[in-house]
Length: 217
Image (cartoon, rainbow, N blue to C red; front, side, top):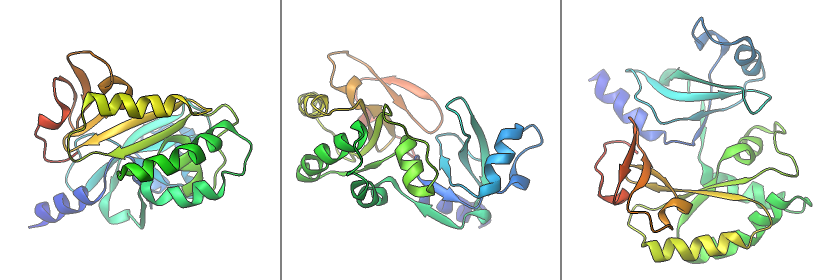
């Protein structure tokens, strides 16, 4: 019964969701000192793709520099709050007055993405900053977006989306969230016969990302 409850709770939290509640005492003994220090201000951690032992969820701790990333497991009982990428769109657009390319890119892409009718959200450094209030972006930062695609999109559609994104004033990376994992929009828009699908357990080279079966995305 407890295992089924854990699995249900694990499935509530999706890759790129931001969770609050991880404390220094939850870290393993081999955790780097910077990770312990980072958790002192109670920042969110990001859900990552990895198998999770019962009662836990795989997460990543973010430090002050780009190379400071620590993978660990968070007790499900410790989660106090969850924010999904879609919930960051409104606060992000409120920041679009900033004269930085990534904010200009976001303002430019928000309308067409909404018109396409897909669920999308903000991940990466900007997503972390918006959720936590901790400044981690800079004028040259990329814009990372997640687009929920429960149903297949054609390569022609992917190409048209990529052409739209290419007009943005900042580098934009888009991940397509399929039922079994995620694939890069840029890769699906190519003519390559196979693409890399990031699943919960391992990356796979596949012909069709939507044809792969997996219990948790």
